[in-house]
Amino acid sequence: FQKAHAAAQERTYREQTEKAQREYGWELIRAGQPAEAARQFRSLGDGTESLSGLASALSAMGDHAGAAVALERAVLHSPERRDLRLRLARERLAAEASR
Image (tube, rainbow, N blue to C red):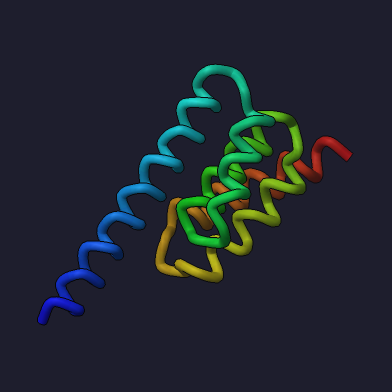
């Protein structure tokens, strides 16, 4: 029981820490620091929310092709997320328009 409880506490701690780190990335975007936000989101790995944040940071920097790649990976993780699929379509259009 103690091992299971300790494991659950560790998992909760990791999840809360990652959530706080993602929120910091969003704050950086809102503060007009998308390059720093992109570094922050990249450091968080390949989860859906981290990839979504990375896509937003890249888009804010004008890298719509990079944003589309990040969103493609996010959609692979969470194909049920309509919001991600819509953003992916918009980023693909923006990338095409900027060529």
